[in-house]
Image (tube, rainbow, N blue to C red; front, side, top):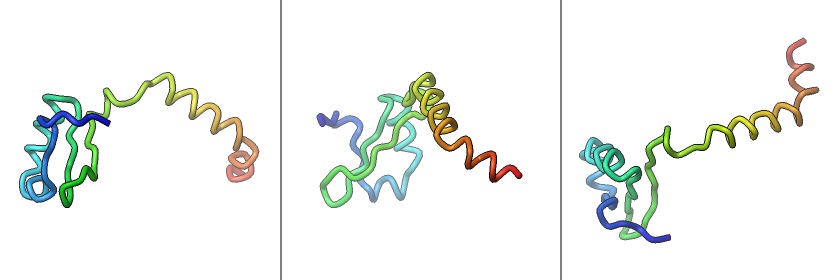
Length: 75
């Protein structure tokens, strides 16, 4: 994975100034928080990070698989 250096924020800086993390996410769509000089966390812009059609298809498959269990729980 290639990491744009503009999106890197240290753990210390993220703890002390989370608004900087959100500004980086607003500008670049993501921020990578480093801990002990290694990438540890990825913060992404939520609305742009998921494909709505994929999420709905996954939810429908989940409901189909567990339909009987949900019906039993609803009793």
